[in-house]
Image (tube, rainbow, N blue to C red):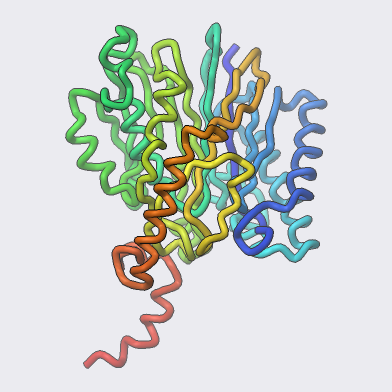
Length: 361
């Protein structure tokens, strides 16, 4: 019987500022999901955070886009927002763009990545969650995992991977999508996903249609029509047995590559892989963070997690990220630290520029 893994997140209040998550919110979410597990609505769950974002990892048998599961997550976010308001946490409920649930959290503010599949003999899965960045942050690592033989040797020597993968790319501004095959259309793929704020990888499949990875592609500023914070995306990646090995999935994060977001969602910054305990960005509200939780999915149960970036082999990456942060911060309000004007249109900058429009003659 197929199992569905849903990872649904929302920023419902930061502690302190935008830096972290108050333990009372985590406790309340666990309590609410435990009640649903006891009722049999869900198979299993895990609650975590990355920065000020609450992450709900849920396994169930109701398939993708289940209104029951999405309503459950929405209710958890509403209840946890109430806790945040009691504590006067910053930005309480900022990702909840509606007062009433409308059947699916997509388009309502929270981010969502989910996949449905038949559980294999062994099912290792890694759930990634990010803070202070946008969904395009997953483009680089997904390409490395599933299309770059210098990262993933399985593409060369594993006959079950040698035919390559299919990338589903979304144009988030025009609400369109396309599927491209690798290695045949690798250059076409790169032409698109190199513009990571416009074209975003949503899913990766094996050539036989088996789902391998999925991401949240919601851009909350486009949904709301105003700046309400960065999207802080999530991603699910299945590993091993015809898919990239765990080490191949994690290897792209050995480079602290640049992503958009950071302070006020308006800057480029290095993507720093950290343990959950270190997912509390404070320097200029950053730098942007990413956590990786590994699970063995066993009859729908989430065995784990293992904190995959709680590993000293990533110490040099974090050091490099800090060095890059030192350098790029010296630019202050000048590009390339600050985003180009096309991206600043989705921040609060237009409100300032509007005051000056009549000054130009």
